[in-house]
Length: 390
Ligand SMILES: NC(=O)CC[C@H](N)C(=O)O
Image 1 (cartoon, rainbow, N blue to C red):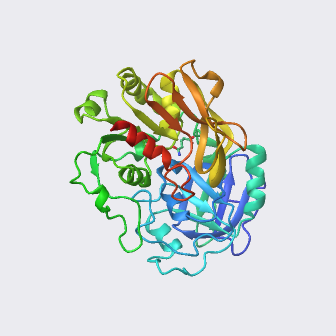
Image 2: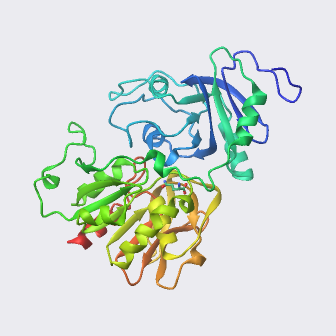
Image 3: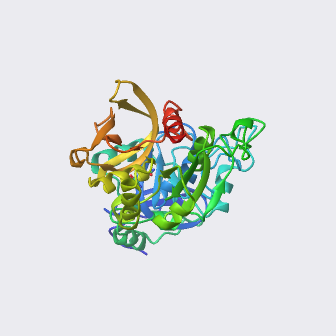
């Protein structure tokens, strides 16, 4: 595959990242062999790589971890936000070391391999992150071949040909089946077993119908903890399917892709719910869909926000919440109609982080009050929503 434009594969390189602009970054592959194409982003959380990799909002994305030691506590079947990792792969600084945790069940590289996801180690992730910050999140191919054989031209073509996240509806690809949710937040020795207060028999609990656009399980666990009975419907659920479950309130989940694309089928349903005065709470993609349903615009951010310590200002009282974030699109606050107020803003760049209708029981936040990983400052939002349904 000799081609003067592309570098020769250095000795020992078994993995590579090829960006759409032709940049080639070699490293050591781990996890599954093969290749995957998507948007390359960076995530600044120091812990929680398993939760991050399994967050369905990362479908279509390759994650650069800025924290150098990833994989060092292995994996277990509990610290997951979905049944499988949805991120296409990850790029890390250091080689993955032997797992050191009493909760480890399977080393990180084996877990990635078992789920067909690619890892790339030995990369200068600091330089890569600076590049993403300056030039924006590029489309890229991540590839792993234990023999170190790469057709760099073909990989470059593939990165260039990928259409990009803008305009892409990925919620349909990651959404689950209709189901009743049981289980609250994780506790040592009990796992996700419900506590006495969230017993399924406590049937005076308000019924929340959650639309799964690619939900993180910890959202449902937190709704249960806040006192709700939770049923889950797929992303494409119709107004009639939602109403047939007689919800006291509707929850709109996080999810991958461009909210404007998912909004094509989701927004008409959400508009009817808003017109009915249905109490609604949206998180991340669900928040963006609420904004679109209100008539506002969303747009792609330069690099997005992905981390576990993003400061957000709550405008009603000036309190700063430290939050978990993962988004690459945002509501344009200046496009909000008169009956919708901005309730939270990012202290990093002033971008919109929360909205509420002034005349309806409807609100949303751009960040992740369910943490996993991240701080739990914002749990009050689940409480506020569920208490409001009683
Ligand atoms: N976590 C999410 O729900 C992400 C929402 C949307 N896909 C974005 O990137 O902005």
